[in-house]
Image (cartoon, rainbow, N blue to C red):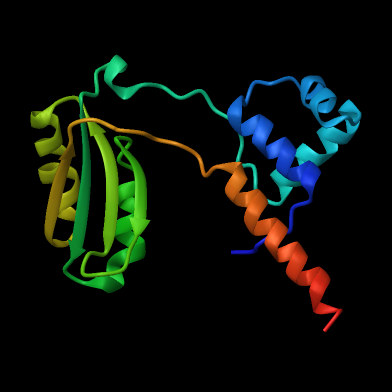
Length: 171
C-alpha cells in the first residue's frame, strides 16, 4: 500500500472532485488557476496512482427494493479456505463489501437484502455452505452518515510530511 506525496494542486483537485465528481475539468482548472490540460493530466496521474478510483452514480438500495442492510461476520471452519471463500462471496451480488479483519472473525461483509426473509435465504443458502463454523449478523436500521475521507485530513498529513522532508536536510 504505497503512500504518495501530494502537492497543493493535487490536494485542491481532490477536494473539488470529491465534492462533485461531475464537475467539469475546465471549472476545476479555473478554480485552481491552471489550464484544462494540466487538470486532465493531474486527474490521469491521480487515477494511474490509484488515488482516484473512478466516479460512479450512487444508487439508493432502498429505492430499488433492498430494504435490509446487514453486516455479517463469517467464521471459517478452516481459515486456510479464506481465498476460496472470498471468491465465492464475491459471486453473491448482494454483498457490496468484504473485509479481511483482525479478531476472531475471518471475513466481515456488508450486504443488502430485499427483506429479512431474503437475508435469511442469503445466509442459509449462499453463505453457510461455504464452510463456515458460524456467522453473526447485525442489521442496520439506518445510516447516520456515509462519507469520503475529508480532503482537509489529506492536506494536513501531506503538509506535515512535506515539512518533515524539508526539515530532514537541515538537521
